Image (cartoon, rainbow, N blue to C red; front, side):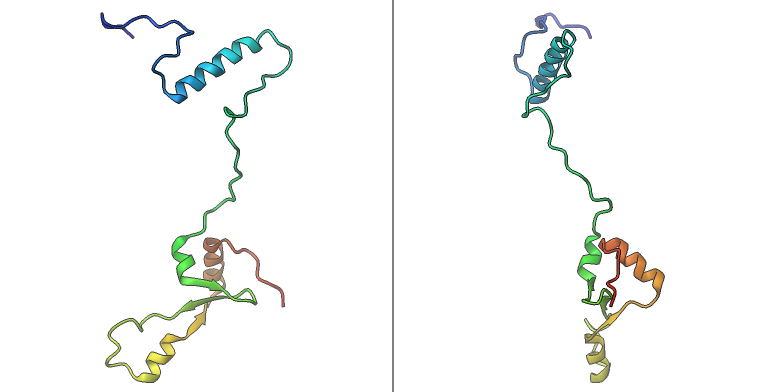
Length: 125
């Protein structure tokens, strides 16, 4: 773009008042120019190469982590709803039953929860 009157022209070799990204790019540029005259491939310094991390696919859903657990035999258990409040009119047997855990009904629902939890295989008995 256009320079304002107070701006000085910057030469290619000047590394003054640049951010880390700009310094990295200028180093890469200078290394790249030198590598044009070499036959071997460009070797970057280790501090410039980012560490590669393999992604594992789908992230575990944090809501499912809190609501479901995988049992020892591979089935999924969940808590029952309805016992947190308004229990005054419910019978004691009903509230006790709501306090116990239960499994997941339906193959499609279980597969969906397995995908969200990141558990894909059911243990064979």
